[in-house]
Image (cartoon, rainbow, N blue to C red):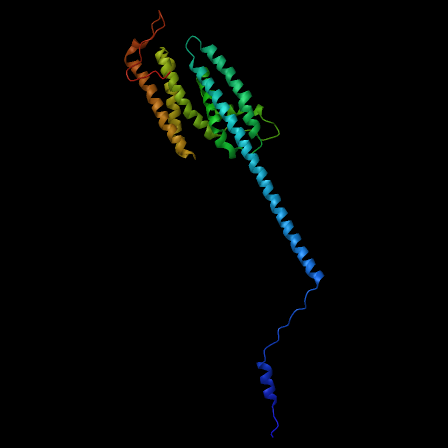
Length: 288
């Protein structure tokens, strides 16, 4: 019988070919597992609480903004409705009752400013009111239209934006940023003003007030000429383009009315005996 013989090299080969034994960690104790689980739950609860608090703030902000938007829309509608009343009041003006009608219109503008515009100012002062511009812009444009129409009929000039905003400063809290009519709403209001001036000019032609009608014609042409240069540079150019087309039609109607009276002479001058007037020139309709 032969004894098994193994050389040192054989032992080395066996040692190298053997699979390494995986070192197994010691099992965690029960109190370590409980502590780890408690820490995980605490972290999860803290994260959930932080997220809930953050989204609760966002919810409150959005709800407040939506509520404010509804109030601003309501105030804008009230301004629009009462500004139209001022415009209708100015259209009642004639050569005989100009001072009386304009005095009443001035009181109406003061009432609109004190009752309705002030409410809008209180809602928007001190806030990022540009975020709600589309909610209040229609009312502001109508207010600009009413004030500029009254101011032109009284003084024959155009009230500028700084003068309009100066009327809003007393309505604001001095400690907050006051609401200011922006240049875009002012220009859009001027575009609407030309339509009311066209109606006023046609009425003055039918009443024989040709000098005032010519003054309106020159004023509207100047506004159209200046806004033609400004309109392409405006951000909200789509709305202004429509208004510019309407403005051009208003200018042409006033020019046709004044031209017809000028060409046909005194045929359309009202009779002094009974105050009646002749028909309008051919192609000119009585807008009023």
